[in-house]
Image (cartoon, rainbow over all chains, first blue to last red):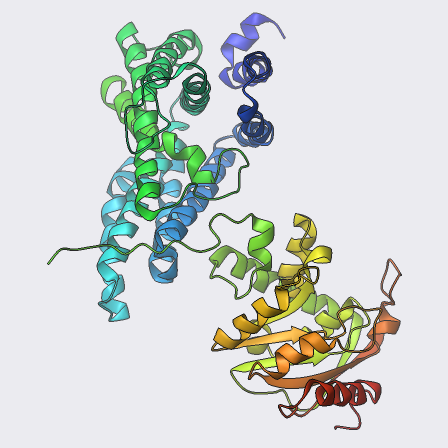
Length: 302
Length: 228
């Protein structure tokens, strides 16, 4: 495998780079002696092969993985807020997740864009069909969050893969966001002194700025492989979207946790918490990146 | 008047899957419920393909029913499940030793999905008190209990009988015959193409632990024939 063949194939390139980067990250954790980072690191050892296996399986594999992740993340959200007791609402959001990922996979831009409207319209029918009043406003409101945040926002990850150079987009968005998270956590722990938000008291100015800086640096490092068609300002914007969007997504779900009074959304991923604790930063980055690329560079079919 | 949302997170949100699988009462979970239904159909089909399940006695009725069965084989739970109609089967929870079935995830998955098992911690001193409170507060449920606690023991434990006797639940004796020959204790594989008999007795009257123990011993030793 020579350098030119790597450069032509983002998936092969990122598989190799991620394997090396993951090893280096292990060395960094060992060197900085951040004992608390070992548990999430070991969990990544299982997660990375799953993500890359789905990508290697192609667009269908990726769509299936995004759908499963969306359903599981929404399930955690519904259990945390108590919405899970309202089974008809939960099933409606599950159906919306399946439908939106299907429209993203086909891809059918018109259906994909209008799907949240139809899903919310369908949700309005549930209290009427159940002929109930008590608790229905809360269940409806939380289900709308489910439709928009877990079905529609996350389905953009499926749609991202449909662009001619979609694999590069997907891998960049996923890896940069996760890498960003890991670095913000690591350096926040090591050098962070100034806390800046009550929503997530562990967040520090130093960790957040470092995360933003590394996101922008990562975007430029990935320029030639992930989005070679972009001008410099597009690459800068991609870095900013990941650097800021990831942290807003993280804080949004942290706010939900503080409101309902839980620490983590689950225990599925040791060292990370639940699935939602892991993908929360992706939820905002995926749609913003998608529409940025679509609006300014016409990157998507449909 | 201000509008306030009332969030009530599920109690199992911070529990690992292994513990979620074994909890009683079961918390609603669409994924696990669907998997349980599929696994149940699969295992009941497999059992019926390999064994003749001969059921006798009336299927008990009631909202709170505890089936008290003798236990000599891993096939016992599956035989009782196969002998019950689906609407009863889907509600049942079989008490299973936490230290044996719920210490590792693969075994917990198998026990919970195929055998409808819930965890009973026989190593904890306070477990019986916890179950006594649980049974008291439950308004409905079907339990499959092996009062002997083990396949290697024939007599019922007085402590669990005491809890059941004072629970207010309908206590129904169940005698299982033929399962010990179909899959004896200590053997790695089962022996197919045999008959397993499952006999449901008449509900036992609420009485002293000693009386309950004697009634169960009589029912099990006669294979349920005396009662039928």
